[in-house]
Image (cartoon, rainbow, N blue to C red):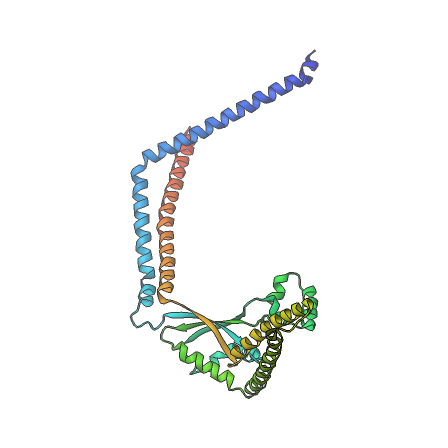
Length: 325
């Protein structure tokens, strides 16, 4: 009879539920007791805690002022000798000059006095997958082969071999505030343009583009002549003429753009300049965050040490009393 009672599933479930109920009740009492003791501890030691927080905050503020004072004086020095500016210039390196420009950037420190005042130069292609195709089927095939050799699509776009194939390149300059960037960049453009190879290639390419432009105008004039005469033309032929004219206009605009950008070996598209006020604002924000961090860390540290020390003293007294017994 006793065994049957023990093996009864209903009785087993009832015991389990009671045990769980007792466990959660005990846990609730423990949490409540812990909360009560914590509140009592805070009330009992409120004066000490407030004093420690005030001391930690004041000490953190003082340490921040003394540790960053030298940096602040250097940053806001009226001579501006160490202030820097950022320039981002988007260019078109024509006639295969990209290799020359990359090599020049890698060795710009050896180009003084022209580069004196430049802290850093970086170049990065403006990503455009269609620049890699360049209306050439062989380029498309090569691109497909390269894509099969990399694990991710981004690796192909930012690969050093493909990066320089982008039509537009962004050159970033970090320079001293006193640096005359306009004079420098004009000299840099002139230096690239005066390289004998690029100078000769520029003349050849521009002559070809100008001749191509003249041929396009002749073709357009012939189509316009047919359309203006009002001669009877089949509807299909008329549609073909209009389509051909539209295609010629698109090609003509592309040729004119290439002529415009081809006037210089290193053609500047646009540039951005980071204002000094924005740089100082960013530095001030970083200092403010750093200062706030210390002013919070020290009070928290002092309170934590106080709690640990208090618990340590209580534990010592408890076991000392047990030992005496």
